[in-house]
Length: 258
View 1 (tube, rainbow, N blue to C red):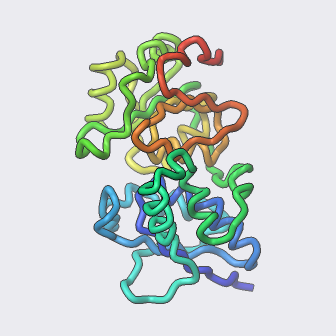
View 2 (cartoon, helix red, strand yellow):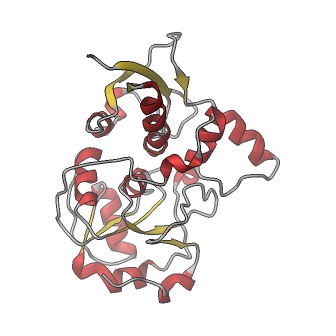
């Protein structure tokens, strides 16, 4: 029997789509169907997600057993669930000084009546590509200033000193050059698509990065994580064993051994 397709509309950004997956997985299980994820090219996200900006997220999504289709959203078409609706709730709360550290997935769950516990277990699965024990990722270079989700107080030099002999960097050439120039040299393993990046993350023992799509992948795989927390919007914090939140240099003495 062909599974029922449950249509989900989402404008992104890419990490936001990945963080919607535990909700999507739960809803599809309850409806005994598969997701059709309709990606909207909206002007209010960091990047308009026209297909040329998908970075292979369609490949990543279609590797999940609960996703049956990925395509562009056609304006005006009906959907089962509009996963952009959380933005209105989030915006109103933040303007009132509430929910600064609430996770993006929790905003979506709260909006659509899905338990927060949906993200307690892994929601991503990939064939692993064990390139290195440690994966570094630091997005931001080349973006507009308000979209650089970095923290000058994160102790990258200590992180680099402890792990660089066992690490690779994933990201763009520009991001890699900026990282090496400010933190230290580390080999660049090029991953042209998010699916290829996910395979490298699946094969590592520890992910270290900032609040970007690669961190969302690491969380979806429930990897050990050291997160460079962006204090302007710390909305990706998951409290669980194996996660260290780096808000300042105090974590330099808490860096785990491999």
